[in-house]
Length: 170
Length: 102
Image (cartoon, rainbow over all chains, first blue to last red; front, top):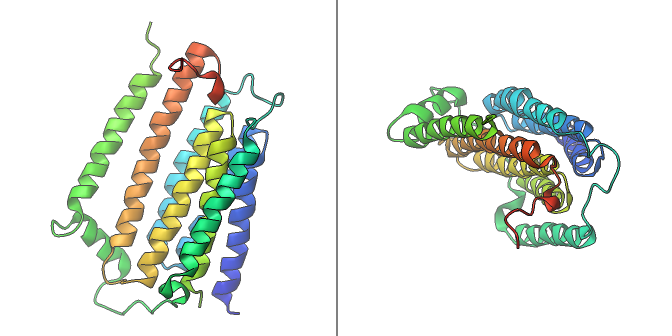
């Protein structure tokens, strides 16, 4: 077992444990903090997968912006739901069976696939590193400049829409 | 060397946990938290298929970045909807929001 496998197992344990805490904690602030732990584990996995830019974006965008926004939302809406009353609805055993079935189905489908135990090839030492190629791919007209611009329009529309929806209309 | 299957099984497990949270939680903010778990499972899949497939093209990472942008948009709109509902009805419990149900 080499170092990357040890790192993978540790971060996978962190991800699964804190994801279970996210769906089961009563206190929503704690759930948001456990979500931060999960996101951090995913960022470690991106680093293991040699996608360093995505690891940094995961920390900055997900942990720095999205998780903090969740904490603000919990603080704005937490009056009545704090510790009393059930946190899960009455059909939870059915939902547990359904999600276990989903996992089982994915497991069966994956274990029938040939490429499952493929090992990573070394990234070839070309003229450019992966970050440069990612930037070129995002801005070159032959590659992904159109989806990139559409994503920025989507973000702008979501921003204006959320300001409008949350605005205090007298 | 980590085989591809480890990542795929981890992301299947994370997706199922997120699905369980979406189905089970009563608080609308907690449902959105679980949706984030599912989006992260998808992203692990995308990046690991990029790494184990053809690293010469950057498709997988670009997809992951688009998912980041969509997740940010979804959280912004979702949380502002929840906040707006909370101000009008003083509740964020998903099964009490039955305005459009008859």
